Length: 239
Image (cartoon, rainbow, N blue to C red; front, side, top):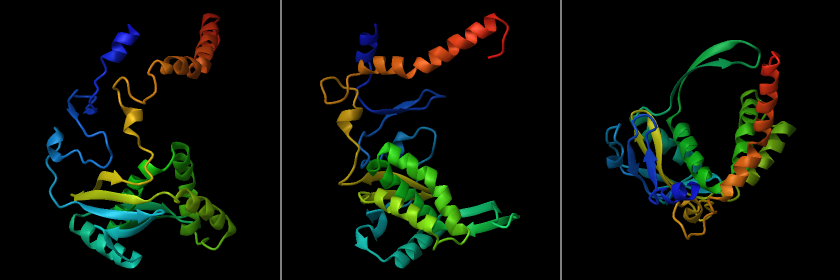
């Protein structure tokens, strides 16, 4: 029965809306944009897309044109500003203990964050990406509180710089009504492999039957926990 179910899995990549059960085909490769006609619940997006190039985590070009950091930020501010990107209204926790409201405009920074996340999504290992995400709030806090020249910031910087060694490539974005959306990503150092994510048989992908043993081992502690709770409930004890 399990084998029959596995063989019936669709070979074509798709996207499914879990509420309405609407599904449509989507390109399996990150460099390929899905296209506006594929989205059933949102209108077509206007505005020409543009690309940001990265080398070792640093943004270095727009649409293939080399650009300095200051000029890049100025251009992204102008592009994003036309679409209302990067408007922030937040309550901050100041270092001395008070709360203060801040209203900011940061279109360039918002676009860069989306683009950088896009290129990291195909070049960073999963555990490395998760570790970096855990450390970034601490890194940001140090800078916000004026500790740029602290030894702890230097230590974190070394780790972050190491993580960015192969974060190179190009990300294409589209701006629309306050949003900066990544629509494609490409990198010579990409970890994405179509062979590993395919549902088709006879490819290099892992054998789906391998998941059965993994699930049994992964759920061992949960079965043990549930069995213990069942015994306690039977005796009237709390879980």
